[in-house]
Image (tube, rainbow, N blue to C red; front, side, top):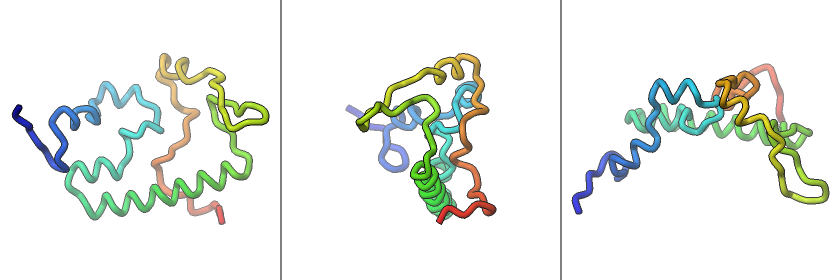
Length: 118
């Protein structure tokens, strides 16, 4: 068996799993992990920028956690009473069919400087 390795010892097939074509990109919600800027930089060999983006995204994740602790609720799920389980309440597949993702947060965007999450 011949292995065709690429950067990071991934096979060509593995690289295609993360490929982002223009047709696919226009159908994805802004929260899709294939849109992560740090991942794109890493794939392009921009290691310093990839690390900077990773650190910035980690800051965003800390902010999101604080928002959740303050009562933020998921968009398409509801927490079951008395438990830790969530149930789907609808909306995702409808948004996907319409290609309308305006209600999705920009989780990969810049960190807001006018909000204090500490």
